[in-house]
Amino acid sequence: MQMDVVYKVDENKEKKMLAEKEALEMVSKEITKDKTIHYLMESGYSSHEATNMVVKLERFNRKMKIKKAQTRMVRGGIFILAGLMITIFINHISANNFGFITAGMAILFGSIQFFKGLTLNFH
Image (cartoon, rainbow, N blue to C red; front, side):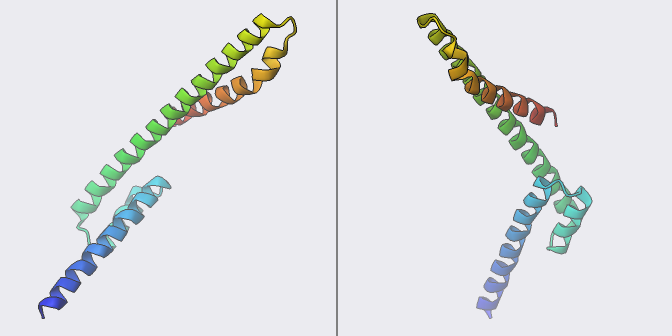
């Protein structure tokens, strides 16, 4: 009898954990807040618990997007600076204009990454 109670508690806990994971995916995919709350309520959460969880997941998701955007901006800035330094160095030591050709792709890649991060930050 006691074993049945323990099994049922573990089963409910597992079901709620799966629901939390699914809710995080729903918030990440920008599925409406109401649908996510409804899904959590069907999984055994109260209306208040489901609403609080969705709000927390939305905050977490937003923070992760900002962190990803900032990482892209930093990485892009590093590539731009490295490309510029290589360009200046090669142009300084050679009479030809090979520096820009050599490091132009790094500058281009860095610029793309920087602006992708910038747009993600404001999205």
